[in-house]
Length: 250
Image (cartoon, rainbow, N blue to C red; front, top):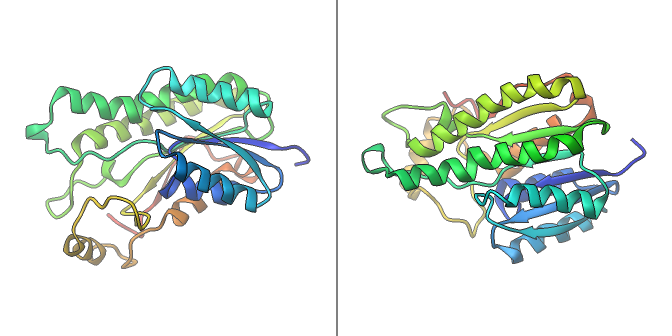
């Protein structure tokens, strides 16, 4: 393209966010690596970006704080001179059953997932307008689609991620006149980093894999490949879509 692309990835100290940074990194990229507090992980991601020929910086902050999304956008623009791609990935899964889910827990999921995406997109759009191949990509989840007695349910997270997908579709219509595409990637069961917390026991994971047509868990790189596809200039006629990366999980 002849110019540097500026990319903001939230929740990028490990897992899917870190994999997105590694996949998107290159000699013509500047990437702002966000994490809530895992500075060491974010620095490791930044080193991988530099190893791929890119440049970047680390930003810390709780994405559920209403001021943080706007601050992240402002830092990317101030430090790198613009903004081309936003990957809204930060957020944690909550398996609390509906019967014991309290208002505070539900509100936490909304703040860190749905409102975080809304605030990040709202702050980003004025800077994305007029850029070459501007992109907004949200990371959703299979938990907004799979509701069965033989699968774990995540009521608060499911509601927040479903809200993200609806907002993606609405925003894609409003952003289209500026050439900004807005899409989501919905991972299925995805393997965590070796040091990451596992929501299920080994036996539970075996049962999960048996129900996936491709008979394996996804990897952060599987998801990052889909994000890179949607972030690419060649994907400019795709907007308002949810791309499922789940091994055929139904």
